Image 1: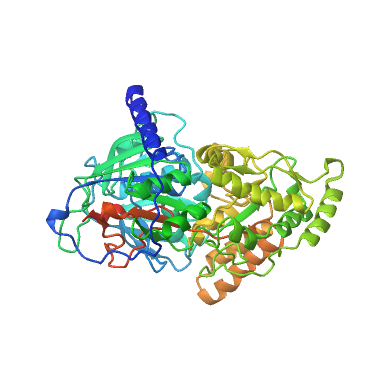
Image 2: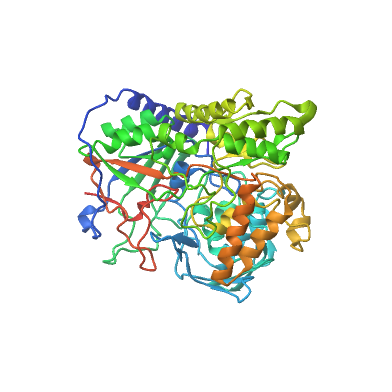
Length: 585
């Protein structure tokens, strides 16, 4: 990408900001929205362009680029995954046609759908899937038995090395079949393959060039990149897209989507109210503006995802000099946080607090061991914590917040609760979300005292466990990756708490490997109880995601297109709309 094209798109993004700032706020009647009918549009409905506002910058599209909710949704117009999540919460095959688990849950055979091509015409096949999985788990890959050149001797190091630490090998069985072998049994492997919509398949051509991998996304999805900058992504219809609608019509319906970063929720809300954008993405932290928009039925429609952003704060035990190496300090912070008050005041009741690190639909769910909000008890633990700290006392923490005013206010509310319990605070670290993510998930470990609000994203337990254990590769791991430079470098990157507690590890590993659902449930609950009672993860508010569309845009078909297996889709989870079947009326 040349500098002139980047500059032009940056100027265009700033013009969007100016236009949004000029929007006048209207007053409308309140109500809730209904979903479009499950019908197939006529050929006359093909075409049209849409503009959607998102809540942050788009860091890029290569293995090392970790995108949060709104920016993640942009990438999902270009990319697809082997697995998707249906409206009923079950993981279903998408680019894959089926999955088969061995009796001990250590081998998973993945069958792929035939006839799928990338937007550049490349064939989607088993060799390509192996390439993606190998790069994801090791930073390097092979194609047809030979090392795959990327233009960089360093390969593609990423947090995937830690997340995928249980994968020992990926083998091509035939052109449409891949076998994945695990070190330990994992009955939740499909959740790992879904990874909240992040485990996408990339074309060989994208992976081949390390200089452009981040800026040149090539996927099997309904759209493909026309232009890209961190603040604006423009995608156009993929002529090679494989899915068809119920009448056999070629998908997608829309010609073009422009995603624009509007950081401030107030500006995003004004933009969708006025029609400056057709759709806008919001998170629970934007509660004030979500509630205001929800009252304006004659102007906007509301679409709400299930509360699958299961919140927890993870004390960073492993950080050098961390007070959280002492259990008394962890419990002091845990007892100081009134999450019901936070939900009521900052989130206007839009979130929920279950008292568990996961939601009630999860096999892990239990409130056993959870420290309850109690200022007096928190102060007692602060005193014990200061004794533990000795000359390093008093107990003092640093919080972080995104650059948006909403994020800073939300973080301040938490900070005020900690101060009330006698915990001292350093100035809040304020940086753009993409920068914060890079400092949390980094070689050498999380830089902050907490990992705030991560990592659980729905029932994908296979994706949750790698964050809760002490390190990616157990000390007795025989996985060849464990001894490599990347294996060593990323061993604690995903283990955000860095707690080093192998008892915690063993509880989770036993639950993962148990193929008997009845006995597995008890093991999952035991692991969660241990996690909570030791303050290794503090249950917080569970949130969700919203999309609002301007009525004048006449966007129809949201959530109407069935999944390839015939199941009902989730119109949005952590990634915004599924744009494939949406059209303009």
